[in-house]
Length: 159
Figure 1 (cartoon, rainbow, N blue to C red):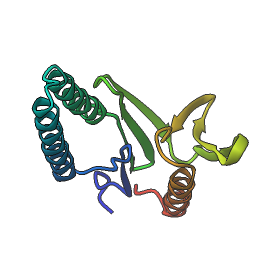
Figure 2: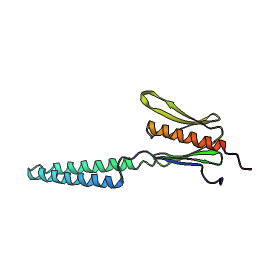
Figure 3: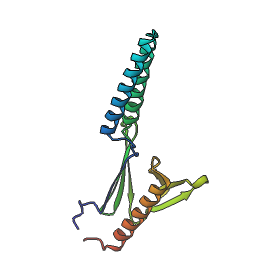
Figure 4: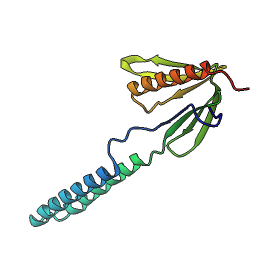
């Protein structure tokens, strides 16, 4: 295997329940609903309500945009005996962690009420991985990481 080819390459992102197309469909439905409601209030003489209906629509739009503005992700790569974790937080700040794969320990700590925490540790350094994932997803990632590390350790080093 080429040393520059990743043995494992995972990109972890928070779950988005609504696609960009779904966002525009929801906004269109809300806009039509608000327009109809505004017309009804205007017809009964309650014209100031129209401004509040428009404000509600704007607040929903801003809430969705704030949610989708979250740029968080974690990239996990296993290349040539080194596991690298690149983390980007909500605001885009980056951090990078490197661990020798031979000594790396992957542990899934069970917390209260069915939750868990995925920890990578080696030589006294610890990194929590996938805090934005569901407990089931963290368990699946832990299993994938353990399998990839076992394969990497079983492969003889190229000289």
